[in-house]
Length: 285
Image (cartoon, rainbow, N blue to C red; front, top):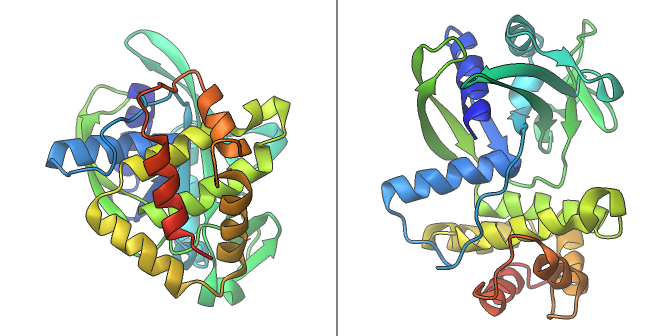
């Protein structure tokens, strides 16, 4: 996690004059959330959790209201460029990469830019699926539309970060991580997309992440997840999530549980029945 934390602190430092709320998803967000919950001593739902899995990606969610604002979006793009990031050729302006040296070792870090449901800001955003960018002047900065991230901007969890920037200077900053419900939504869709893809490890990482998300839920998050599932029951993406749970996580023989058990970080002590029961309780249909 060190290169990712350093890279994140670098970005927060560059944006310090224009404070920008940033939400970190994916594996790096799960790591930050877990460290935060351990630090504040929150009681989590499952006692048995996997070891955090390695990642070199920062899934960086831009709020819809910011993506709709050309000036604020340009500020983020300029900060990324000042740090030396270059667009990934096969996903130009959606993904950026740079090489960072930590403890004398060079490692590549990649930023994936995403945006959740656009809601009332859709009229101010140019969408050419899966890309979205602010209307007006063409800008070399695109966010991947993640409509399945329902409620990602509702009550995200504030996480404090302390560490050193790439130049060695100490710095403190804050980011947000999603609540359990939008996290579950994204991972259910990701698993469904990858469960038959050999090149994407058959979705095993996403199955493990789903177990981790459920396992790290606090009592407040559990109640919030049930409420959000009911509040957004009419959303087509939530209805699709119900189908995925029924098809892939209803029993031990379903693909989601099979892939979970195949993951190298899976342990027999994992509380799989409790995981499945909670997942089905949230997505009752």
